[in-house]
Amino acid sequence: MDQLLQIGGSLLAILALAWLAGKMQLGGDRRIRSEAEARELADEIMTGFDPIEIAIDRAGYGALLRDGDGSVMVLRRHGAHFAGRLLDRRPTARLDQNLLTIEAEDRPFGAVTLDLGRQAQVWAASLRRLEAR
Image (cartoon, rainbow, N blue to C red):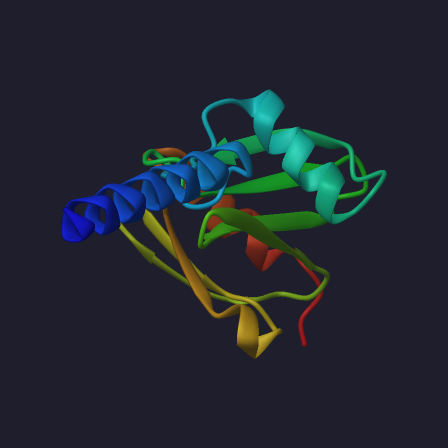
């Protein structure tokens, strides 16, 4: 009987923790699903960044955004959240058909590969126009 109570109590504790993690939006499979969501994420990362051009990865794992001044921000998924960097200098970028791999100057940010479809070539060319290092 004591063992059944212990198992039942453990099960209730696990369910309570799962419910709490869901309420806190921990974990999950978060993706960028729209331009509006990409704009919101960019504003969270850099207040006042107002993109006029947005390219979202086909799987929703990242995005490229350009503002009116020609500054480019790259967003990437980092766990259950998104991180972003402003590319103020020409990054190392590789184009492989529809895939664009960008290595930001910030090494801890790491490389991000975006499946941008036909837009990949256009964005790769535009990154070459950024100031050289």
